Length: 341
Image (cartoon, rainbow, N blue to C red; front, side, top):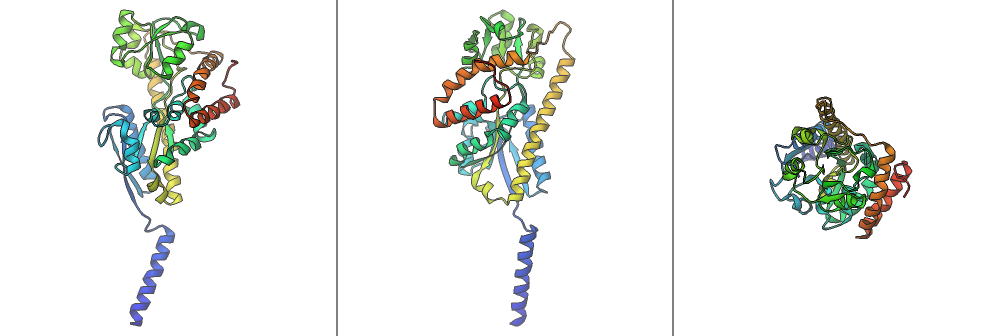
């Protein structure tokens, strides 16, 4: 009897030491759903994120990345994560603006960013991450960090060197903030699906378009008919959120949380670098008659000042929207990115 007791005590001591050392730390096999299809280059990069998480955590956290619609519709992933149907999502935050309008404003404050790192700095150092979690955690999600598919270039058949050149410009812009900001700048926005952009440019229905990154625009032949792209872009850079079920996150040891957060932060830089390489290669391979226009900082600031009035309107939608607006303006002003009103 004494031998059994001694053995039990010894095993208990070993168990305690093992737990203390992390040798028997819980493993997490998670499923995340993306808002991108399997064939999208961004989905391929997101699979690299899953590998980065596994490496950072020494295999304690493994993630199966699933393409859009695998388990639920793209607009239902927030509820699915909260319910534990999936463990997390990799998605455009604006899809959930119907629940909380603030998510639409923070997801893509049109005109705010001229570089992906400006947005990342706002999230990590300007109060954006804290705001995201203040909004999301009551829904049962924890925001790990942001990434982005990149700053969209602007497609144009006519030279655009600043805000004044937007006046009267017939352009394709989706409904919502993008359309409102361009209208406020004096342009004449038209709501067209992406599938009709090429034909509409070719036939002269529009002269310019909000569409995609420089390399994507070029690969789809848009620069063959619209030879005055604005690059780097000045208007649209979406925030893609990487969020997880809050209870799952809270169950992770702090060390594992930090490793997953670091992998996510590192991934954002990795994605930016990969997309920038594609854009730079596309720029280098542009036809000789394609003229690239890079707006000076002063013109970008003018566009932000016009956009600011639309952000202010959006801020009225909810208390959190106002909080996003105030935090965003404080950040932009602190960095000298706002022009005179």
